[in-house]
Image 1 (cartoon, rainbow, N blue to C red):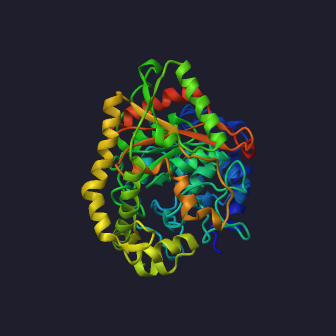
Image 2 (cartoon, rainbow, N blue to C red):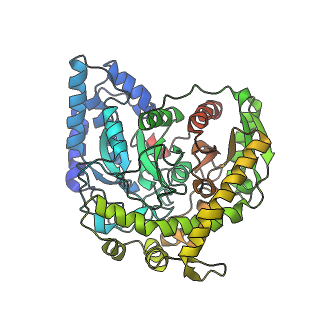
Image 3 (cartoon, rainbow, N blue to C red):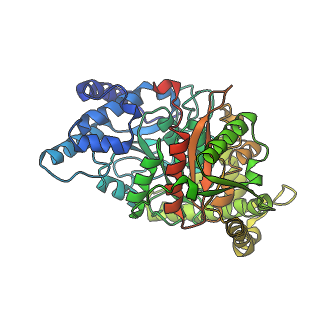
Length: 503
């Protein structure tokens, strides 16, 4: 099938890499984006050499299928412009000269915005998504667009439309026989393999948090509405949000401050943090995940964080009653409006007809196009009544349960494993409804009620060597506090694991 990471692009990468990356330390991939921006600002290293360095790292691992398109010439031109501004004495920028990768459903002028689907393979947007304007104003340099689960309708990254010959699906940074997760698959794989320092994804039910948990990076889902959603290929208007992704919580905090315009809080002292362990999210964990998660909790306790067990009766039923009706029934209108407002030249019908990945095609043909959802017996029924009930009573009831849990237990956040298992083997069978439901079991419930969540890596499984992440969730609007807590937790847990291919 089609790939935009062409031989020409790879050749440009190789040519650029030798030109000006020699003055970048070999362990530069261990630095945060904050540190890189500071080094560029202080003229210890040029933006051109930094961008060349990261382009060369991208070129070394095409087998991850992490990128759909890259533009080395443009990125290096922007890097030289950043260096020229500093040479003139202009002010340093928060991300001045630092490269970033963008999920290919977030519009960037000059790049196609495919959303990982064939019908949009040649769609060049006329305007940036507003969040891209903010990132570029802060000095970030977009080097490419990352691969994703087609139309963001999945959690594995097994996309049959965009890939290398004979190698289908975005692959895990720690083991390329396994899934990268999704739908922000390429962004997470690129971060986990240290092919890029920072990236943007999107999150509807876990799509920035879950793949980061599986690839050893940090993924953030803000409260819905904290960032603009204009210029982002949608699923659900009430659930979608852009999601910053990075290899440190500090870099996620920096990205959030740029995108939200809100100054970050200082890290909260450990002894002032009270976290709840909700029973539902800790049930039926894979042994490796359970072991690492329990060890992570003990580290917090020994550092002074107060951790208490909490019960959330009926949360599974409440969440499942609203998740599918809301996501499915909002998708057709959201996509139709997007395709028209962004002048894609593609109708919803054409988009649906050209879907490549069998799992996504199945979702559209059975549910999105006819407007059906599974009934209690598993058979399809008209989705309108289920959606109306979800919005009127289901979502408010779920939010009320979260609010009661926080109030009754005086919690700052909930704490649980982001994904109940490590990354599974890749392939068409990875995307069955049963496996999809298990992968997003812990990330999806709070997504229905606009809540922010942050996934932080805590190590790897002893036998598999695959990453495991822990998530903290806060009530809607508590993003700043959640990120401040995240910085403290990261300081206790230490840096995330390093992929063998990153060294």
